[in-house]
Each structure stands twice: as structure tokens, then as C-alpha cells.
Image (cartoon, rainbow, N blue to C red; front, side, top):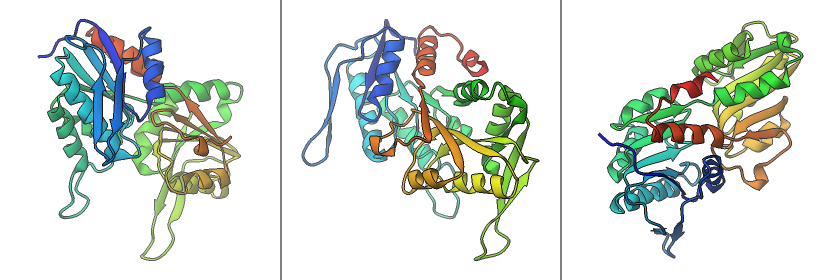
Length: 320
């Protein structure tokens, strides 16, 4: 059984250094001195520039685009800390790549999420701290403790404050059947009813038909999802809510803004008035548009790290 180290040290690789810096500031600590560089052939080189012997080390790294490079950075940093005799190593992964490959969808498919869990453990991580895995069952892929934070306790207060004067006119909607539980939890915190967008293809080569399960007519709708990748599902759901459901306005929120491919263009041209995401994935300057608002995750991760170090319960963070 691993016990905590003598002190907390926060280190960052290259995927999201701003979040790592904010976490360290929230804890009143300096960011650990390290360097992650690449050789001319693309190999990654890690240099830890301070002692971590006996320390409780937290490595902050989202495995977002470029996924494989960021994953290797994390693995090599973990190995470096293990060989430097860190007391305990926690992989802090605000966004975990490969989480959508959690099962065999067809014959001879890999289960890449399980493979990633195995290699993070083999590299030397003693525990993992992450947020809103695509499927919570992925926690079971690890043979080490996983602390799984949720984005809803950060997102819900923003909209509660935004619509405090017209709360009765609001409705929470899941953009597909996969996000029903998340939308229901959001609706419970918000104190509003919720609905579901059900899409189905009647037969091959025929466009999907959208049905709204619930009455959203003349409502201010908040779409709730865990991640937005190409934004196709989200924008189509928003369009159906207006055109089929008769809602007055559509807002959206998600924990992870992957925003790949045509996502920004789709969001910009959609009926969505505002999209709120968390900064689990660094948002490049070219993807920052007026419709997108970003909320910080550092305060919640800092509290979780403090509780892990003190061997205290993480669950109070879910009830805010």
C-alpha cells in the first residue's frame, strides 16, 4: 500500500502547462522544475531539475492532440519520477485520450482504453486523477486507485447564476441517449426538468430523424454533454430543439472541448448562443470565438490533490 510522500510537488508536461501552473498557484506552491523536449528524430527527452526523493509527485498532462506524443510525455515523466525515488506518483489527466475506445464494437477491435490504463500503470503511476471519463467504467481498467472528478459541479453553478432570474423558463437536454445520466444530474443541481434528443435512422441511406422526448417549447434549453469533438451531434441536436421542439434559445456545455475538424465552423454557424467548456484541453488561439466560454478546472483539481495528500475523501467535491 502506498502512503503519501513528505510534501506535494506539481509538475507539468507540454499539453496543458497553464492548468498545471494554476493548480500549483491554488495550492500555494511553485511549479516543479522540469523540461520536456524533442530530439530531431522526434524522440522525447525529459529532464527533472529538482529532487523529488520521497515527495508526493503529481504530473499534470492531458492526453489530447497530439494524443500519442502527449501520452508518451506522460509515460516518460512517470518513469523519470519512479527512478528518482518519488514517494508516490499521481498521473493528473484532466482529459484522457483513447477513452472512447472502451469496448469491442466489432470483431478484432482493440480495447485501446484498457491498453492505455495498463501502460500508465506499468510506467509507475501509483494512482490516477482524471475528470469525466467518456465511460466511468474505464476506472475498472486500472489496477491502481482512480479518482474520477466530474465537470457538472463546475458547469451547473455558471448557468444557475446566468439564469437566476428566469430559472423556470429553462430546461436541460441530453443531445443523445449516451448523456442522459449526466444531463439528469445537471438538471437535479439546476432544479429544472430535462429532456432527451433521440435520433434514429429509419432505414439505410436515409437521413436520421430527430425526436425530442420532452416538451421544450418556448424554453431556454441547455444541452449537456461530456465532450465535443467535431460538434456534429451537438449542432444537429440544437437545430432540432429549435425547429422541431420550438425552444426559444439554445445554450450548450461540455467538460472537454476537443473541437477537431469542422467543429469551430459548425459552432459558429449553429443556433447555439453560447458554448461553455472547461479548460481540460488547452484551447488554441485560432479556436477562440465569441460563442465559446472557458471555465477553469484548476481549483477543483487543487482541492482533490490536497485531499489525496491528506488521505481525505474526494466525494465532497461532487456535492458542490
